[in-house]
Length: 111
Image (cartoon, rainbow, N blue to C red; front, side, top):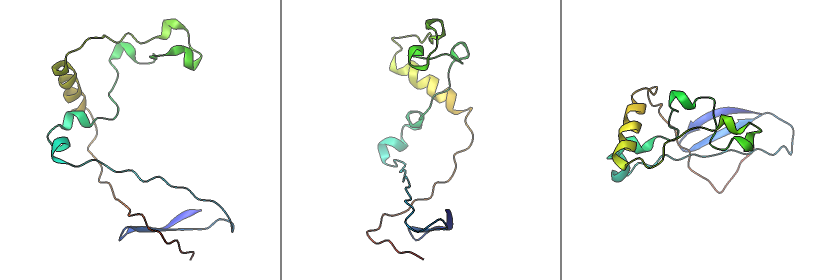
């Protein structure tokens, strides 16, 4: 199975595979309202770890790791400290990629 035609006009076409094959996909939306635009530092989905915590876990027991591998995150940071850390982390991220959106449809056609 492959994408025969990329998203155009809110639709895309898949092809290949055997008859009766089930295909699933995930549509992801990016929030874009005035509140979110005014707070780019809060848009980080994943915050890079501090160097001392790389290779460590918040809950090592869930990964079969020893308690010695627990990350030593500091608790009680102020909102300003968190925002400053996120803003600094954003400077190290790669440029944002353009996202393309597909519109849901109630009809499916087989080609």
